[in-house]
Length: 136
Image 1 (cartoon, rainbow, N blue to C red):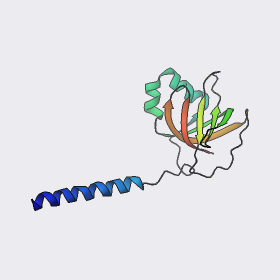
Image 2 (cartoon, helix red, strand yellow):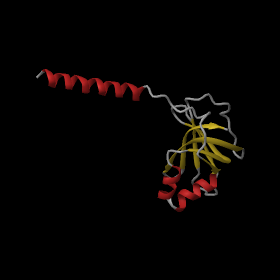
Image 3 (cartoon, rainbow, N blue to C red):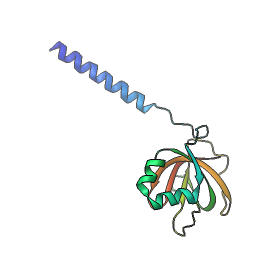
Image 4 (cartoon, rainbow, N blue to C red):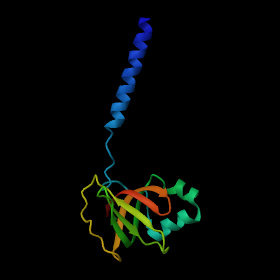
């Protein structure tokens, strides 16, 4: 019985230690992160539009440096700013959601302005989405 209690206590401590480590795991600093891939917004969108599963294998969860022209800027109810880049498609684009964990140099983007962002690709819903973006 004491052996069973000791094993149970050990497993509980192991679980608590793992949970504590995961909860306190630091975020990747996007301003200092190296980009895995650099390309322009129309090329990124075209890759997903042509073959989404191949593009997911190539870009999903990777740090992408994307350059493009601002199509639209929006601010969500939570205060997060999203910048949509032109892709040549009238309806869809590349959405860059600015990182609220990093201090942003600039948040007032104008349509037609040329910008380069670095962020983590989360795939394509209708638009290709990059999260935790910072201006390069």
